[in-house]
Length: 261
Length: 340
Image 1: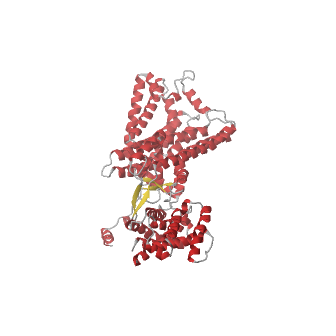
Image 2: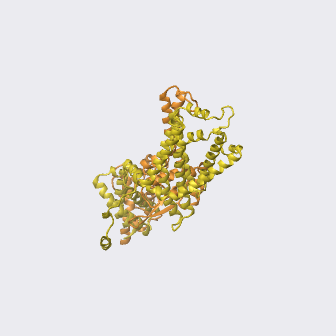
Image 3: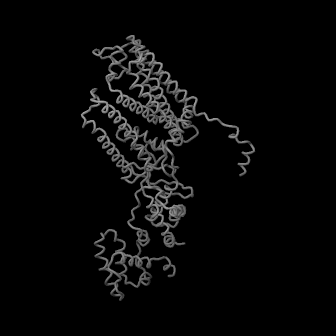
């Protein structure tokens, strides 16, 4: 199977979807089935508590008789309806899928329809053969990682985990990646090369540090620089200082400046 | 425009779109104010185009993924199914669509019936000729051959009467619906699994029927089976027809490609099998409450046949929409619409 899938939007733009991996789908399935098991336990606790056994003919009164009939219907509804119910309710995410951050969508894009949900979950019992081994094999073979139910329903399962960026500024950071200190950057910022490199490296690595360490480290880095320039430190707070660093770095790398150069 | 300026000019739009998408959360579009909704519809196409431009500008992969993800999330919010009113939809389905679907798919039902008849007659003839063959067809748990309990119609009816009716009706109902769902799902094996399931059940019934006739209990057997069995077997065969529709759409795709054929087949087949649920509910209630009752056998048989008759009439004759003259567009109208 591939990692990505392309869909074409009505705007004629191709968007990439990240397909859910086989591993995360099995994890989601495992969690869902675990939940079903828990629900079953809750359904049958009344039986154990009341000491009723289904095979026995000796029911003590009519309410127990009807209770047992209702429990049978509920157990049936849970077995066949669990996935249908949740995928309808949450637009393609059963609780397990929600936890793993994956979602069922139509192959052509957009939210999943009822008939697709019904098909993929009715076919689940075939996919379930040997504990989803059949589903695993079919997912491995098909390009979009679909099990039999997905193939018939025309659905794919996509990953909704956001790409690994920790703040909005990180995309600026990436533009800055792998850049050596140019004479221009020094001119634009008025820093010495080692100062600039220090700030740049701090900026690149700040997300690997915890907040306390940053709070401690950044004023230590900044104080000598401010002293040299002859400015007063604006504030000790991390937010203000990091914004300051960011401005310096963007300024040093901005395209307009390079064009001017 | 340079990549850096592209980033600089567009980042506000992305951040804004991210905020709006974040706001939708669980409520979906209902979580947005009118202004935000309006903004979303304006931002989405622009950001979708940004996803393409980001590729062109060769922007770093993390940013590209982010734009992509934003566009996909917004796409998912905007292009989704219409909200349906479920009860209305279910009513419409059984009023019109289901009988229509049934009549469109009758060849598959015919195939299922043929399989059933062959299996039934095969087991019946074989057991009539050689009574011990019954053991091949009758499952052990229904062990009617138990010497101690004896084989009279009274014994078997008594067994059923001893059980409590509501749980039995519920159990029978759910078990039969499961069999129907399985008959559909096994269709994915190009129909082979469905055929085997029909064949297996047909041989079982044929074997039991012949076994009872061998003991001269033909009438008792049929008065026991008929009240619920006619409808039940019919519904199972309809589900099997759904399985065959699914399987043959995969095996013989016709002018479609195989994947597309499977998908169209699956939609029709799944609707066909879902429509059998009410039949099983009726059959289950009859089996739980009427079959074990003390009504005379002939009444039970008549009841069973009439229930099946009503069902088949519903499937054959309802849902035929009448078209009035005004529904048929005149040639002039058609040409007008073509020009427009």
